[in-house]
Length: 122
View (cartoon, one colour):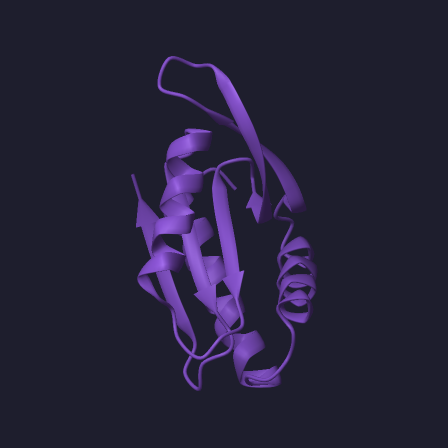
């Protein structure tokens, strides 16, 4: 799936279906496994706990981070299972995106009463 907006839409609708089924109250890993499973059924390339290299502005490798999900090698998906998203959660995924040089990310919180989804672009 090469169209990033279509990929994000699929992630959003799949996440909503998962939240409608499970509601809040499960561990983050349950939501991660379920989202990965359902996306793979849609023929989307999903890497769970994918190692991501982090680079300085001059291209020097300065560290590593593990993405909850990396989709089609172009979209970082960070999952949460908390009461609400915070500015720290947004800062975390923006940091991952800047450091990895990937331009698209999604932050999804399954723990709130209403599913929270943020699409982020650098």
